[in-house]
Image (tube, rainbow, N blue to C red; front, side, top):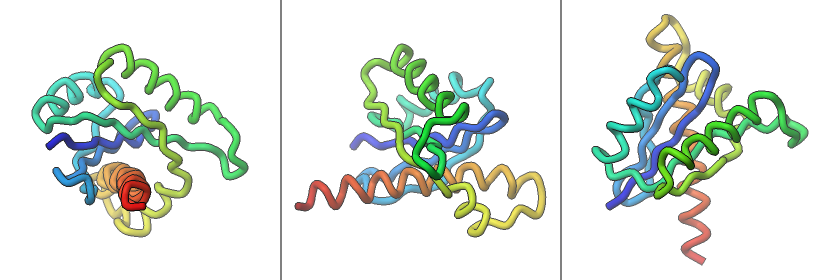
Length: 137
């Protein structure tokens, strides 16, 4: 069955997470750089049978668009051209980085990198949960 992939985009790192085959659970995957994102997606999409990419959409706490929010919009537009058959979703990610930091304390570079993929998993899990509860009504 197709899976969903989440991206938590940042200027230096992009956290990723994958759903399970049932679309119920999200798991942190790995952290990549913006420069390696295209190669990563080229491998992971066919390997994991990805049909949806959920992109973290960092609105401000007031719900407005910031420079980082625009970068997520630009990423979605770029991916839409490169992967026209995929469903691309911008998903509110407010406070996910803080939640990830609480779940995984950054004691060294490795744990700081893991925080990005944990944030992506939080983004993906909230997306999966919202779809599950909507489809169950």
